[in-house]
Image (tube, rainbow, N blue to C red; front, side):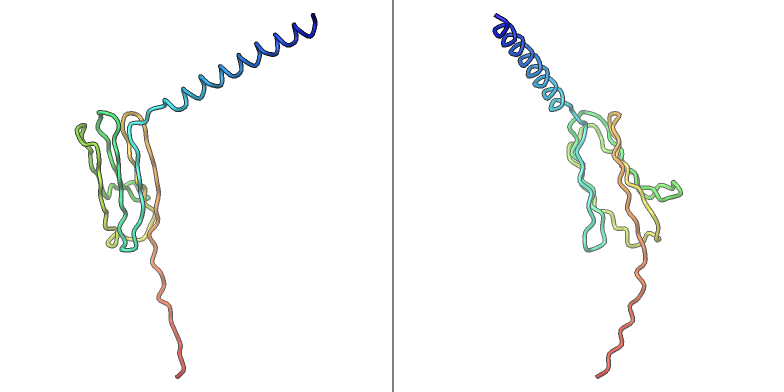
Amino acid sequence: MKNLLKSIAFAVAFTVVFTANTFAEDKETKKVTSFGTGIFASKSGNIHISVDKYADCNALVLVTNDRGHVMFREVIGKDTEKFRKALNVKNLPSGVYTIQITGKGEKLTKTFELSEQPAERVLAIK
């Protein structure tokens, strides 16, 4: 009789834990974000910003320098689902810059740094 009660208690405990984990995973996968992004630098010296909006809301793309000065600003309208922009940063001075994308209470921040490469001197004897 004791073994039967232990087996039943174990089965009930296992079922409760398994069910609780299943519902927890469902909540994790149902978390909805208002946008997805892709930000990368190309060999040509441009920064490419891609934003895919999943919610009917405005989004804001800001590029600022380390002093907080706005170098680029664009509002993505409610009706725009996909935003693509290539920013030419060749003329920007050296420094640290921040790309910030906000929409519907969410914020994504990425930083990049521009620096001058010293000229390399080569000596060749022929």
